Length: 159
Image (tube, rainbow, N blue to C red; front, side, top):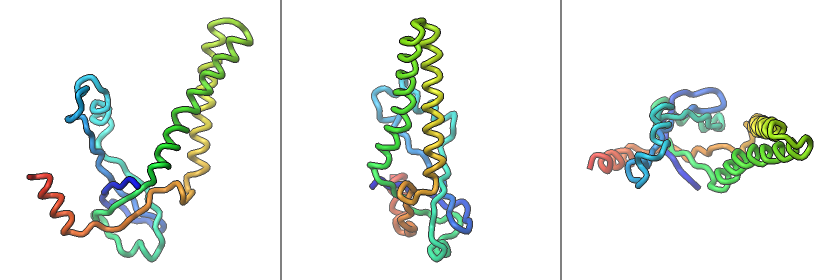
């Protein structure tokens, strides 16, 4: 399981809102100046807010500004990434091929590709909407991080 730390920013009846700070490896990569990841991170901000579903009894253990540990299965990240990237790409190629095969022109191939990509993007969006409350696909709250662990992390960062 992949883990990440975050800070509780809001508490709702059925969930916690947790803010995580994106850690970038741009300073340690050889392609530092040629990669757009650092630039995109600066434009879009460095934090993300996640909705973490918790049981009613567990929710009373958390307060705003508590540091928590979140986890997600690696397989879920891999399969979700494959779905998000490959479905629009495959439908783009299929639409382009159908447009070219059906009408034999470049414009038909282009329009077919754009149409296929749009259908693929809508399919990804629909699947995200349908599975948004599926507990198997959610981030898991592992618990609070103790103040001793926070102090050790702070010492490591400063040292």
